[in-house]
Structure formats: structure tokens, C-alpha cells
Length: 410
Image (cartoon, rainbow, N blue to C red; front, top):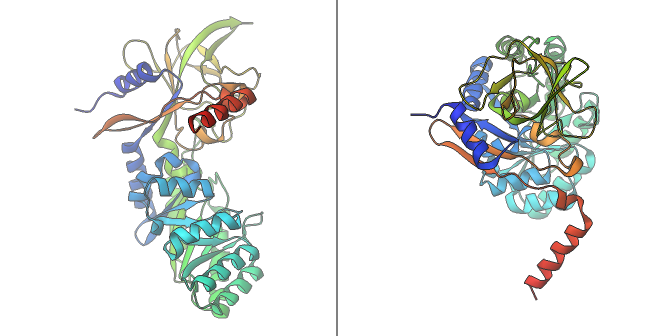
């Protein structure tokens, strides 16, 4: 029998203390199933691992591919044993030395985006020198620093036709992030349709479109959920395209956010000028909701008392602040939570994307939280234990560490 979530959280807190993150793989699987259902058949799903690299190995098994945006993310995937065939090597900057290492290890087993003419030249030269077939995806810009304009994309596609070992496998296009309305997206689909048809007339077949829709995730209680209606409308427009290639939709936040929670502890309680404050042992350096401004918006938050089950948050209002020495460290302002006591666990939901990566992890040299993963089948286990961050901010600690390393090798 699966453990109650209250039991799981208390056991993790006893083992490691707070704060920590918990990723629920069962929720993650259900979310992927929902997205695939809303998308309908014939459209692929790609996970952008920048939103949560700790989920990469699991999602490699249940999505079509992973988008990798840095050399570090590539090393994570290889360390996790993820097959190169699952990887789309992306990112606005590809350092030549790093890209060549990827090419040496994986060659044509990966797919490669092309962000600039310079990136194209590296890939073309390497394919020529090694007589190795490469699949490339020139990236069409959406009006920012990512990718290239239409004319440059056409020039690269024409140049690739002259290369014996390069194949234009598709076009990559990223619309933006946190999009909750479809109007602009539908207009982009129409423009992409016209561009892809034009591109095929001038350069030959373009088999695929890798499309980052930027589907939003609703973090706060007063926001309208973004889900089935949004995805069905966008995918309906995709199916109506005159261009007849395959489409893979790329997502990060929309896949990962709902599977994670951030757990921190009520560590001090006080009242000041009629306002009730709860100070927790975490803070905004560890919890990030896109769009949150000094706790103005109310996230989905549960209270787990020292004994008993989750308590419905109602009644007394609290301002929840973290442990940083900045007035900006407000996780929640004036949210109804009922009575709070020292030692209560505050469980912030929808923290499965970006929170553990975007926060100011090294600010004030607080600990870096542990990360656990849970499933009904295997229970909970630690992916990463909590770590002290102060040695990374201390020159003397670094020197002592180097000295110890040298003595070990003496």
C-alpha cells in the first residue's frame, strides 16, 4: 500500500530537515498523458530539460525527445545514460570546443539546431571532415536574439543542399513563454505555414517543425487554468496547415511544474503593526513562481501540522517570509492559512519547474535544498541531499580544498 503523502513528507523532513523539494513521478506521468491526449495523435512531444534536469531520465522514457540548451545539460543526459537519439542539441550559444566534443561522442545520433551562420559553419565543416551525416534544424527567430530571420534560414538551407553529409531535418521555432491566450500563437502558426511552404519551394523538403509554443502554467489561485482548450485550439491550427510535415511541440514548464512541491518549515512567528508574520527556513532564493512580485499573488499552498493531516488553509491571514536579509523575501503576502505553529510544514505546490534552478541559490550562503522523488511503486528516495553553499563563496575554503587535493596526490 502506498504511503500517505503526509507520511512521506514527515519522513523526508526527519531524514534531511527542511527545506527540500519533492517531485511526484505519478503526477508527472499523468500530466504527460493529459498533454498527449489534448494534442491528439500524430504530434510529438519534446521536454525542454532546462525547466528541471532532475526529470530528464524519466521523461526521456515517456516523451519523444529532450531539448538540451547547454553543454552542462548535455553532460547530465549522458551521465544519466540517455540515448543520443533522444537529444536535440539546442541553445543560443554553442561553443566550438564543446560542440565538437558532442559531435565526437555522438556524431549523427543527435539532432542539432542552428542558431547562426557561424554555428552552421562548425557543423558543416565537421560533417565534411568526418564524412558523418548530421541532422540539423535551422532556428527561425520570433523577433529576439534566438535564431535567424527568414532570409538567413533560406540561405542556410540552400547551402546545406551542397553539403553531402548535412540534412535539413526540420525548422526550430520558439514562440515565447507563459502564453495563456492563443490569438498570437494561431497567427504564428499561419505565418509558419506560409514560410514552410515557401521554404520547400525554394530549397526542397522540410520534414519537421520543432515548435516551442510557450504554453503557460497557472501558478496562482485567481488565474484561469491553461490546459485542454488551449492545446486543442493550437493543435487544431497545426493540423490545418497546408505544409504537410511532422510537428513536435516543445515544452518545459507546462510539463514539469505540477509534479513538484517545495517544503519549508515555520521557524519563527510574530506580529508587527497588526500583521502576522511567519518566517520560514527557505525563501525566494529557492522558490520561484513566474510572475510573482513580493508575494502579491497567492500560490497553491498546504499546511501540514506537526501532527495530523493537511489542514485546509482558511481563517487567519499570514505573510510568509523567508530567511534572507532583504525586504523582497516575501513568499506570500496576506494569505488565509488559519492558525500556524512553530514546526508546521508549509508545502508550496507547482514547484516542479525552474524553482530549484532560477533562485539566487548562493545568496547569503544558505544551504542548497535536497531533492527527493516519489512514486507509488517505489516510494520516496533522495536524488540530491542538501548541501552547504558557503564553501563556494569562501576563498579560504577553496584554497584549503585545493591544498587537501594536492596532499592526497603527494
